[in-house]
Length: 309
Image 1 (cartoon, rainbow, N blue to C red):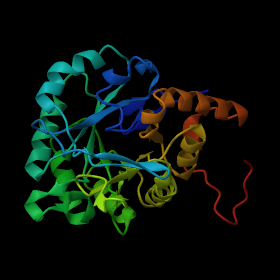
Image 2 (cartoon, rainbow, N blue to C red; image 1 turned 180 degrees about the horizontal axis):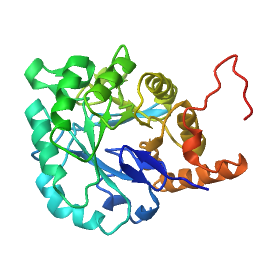
Image 3 (cartoon, rainbow, N blue to C red; image 1 turned 90 degrees about the vertical axis):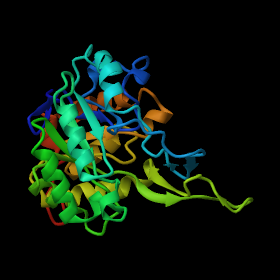
Image 4 (cartoon, one colour; image 1 turned 180 degrees about the vertical axis):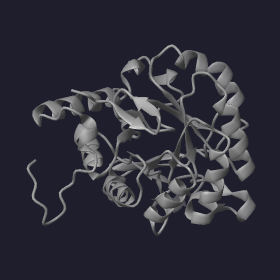
């Protein structure tokens, strides 16, 4: 069986990736997971300078999911390159660095710094961030702004550029097309959905930040729908994520149109989730006599279509 997939020019040995922000910088999970077996390690989001994040409490469990308001806390690009890359270079698994900025210039500078580092194989551009240059609107909610910032970064890197889309929009396909037209090699979706939770005894928000990002099984049907809609609108590969807890979930995303999948919240519940999902994909391929995992992508039979599965 062939589990290899491609995201632009980046070749992965299998479609199972980690979701940024849920797997640390890789080293934190190495005791539980053989990083050599993963399709790619996507590290915690990085900014030009270290970021402390939001005050606590900043994580709360919800029905079928969790809210987080970490605030993109990270050690900064310089320290990541100095302290984390040497460890990751021990493995034969591609490293994809998630990065973000508060301005277009910060995105550009971050991409430039990361693109000349040995051991970094791809970039995942998080555009679900407030844009200080536009009154704190979000880079990923205006197609013109999305096109501008993605095209600016595209000019500064030859690495595979994956754009991570925000689900907090009216038309996700419109945003996907803007990113594709700007030069993105692939798209990842979805990021967390904005939500909040209130303690009914104190009548106070459970998160110090009031609002947070909802992830986990609760958002999976929305994520699957958005992957399907985006894949109808673009020609570039899609990485599906949002509530993937097991191999069945991963298969569902691939049938909807995902070329690869990223495992997020499941890592907090079961540190071995990625490996179990990978083994489950192989078992599914064997059961259904699928020789090439890439042939599974986008094979949903719409109503009225004849299916042989």
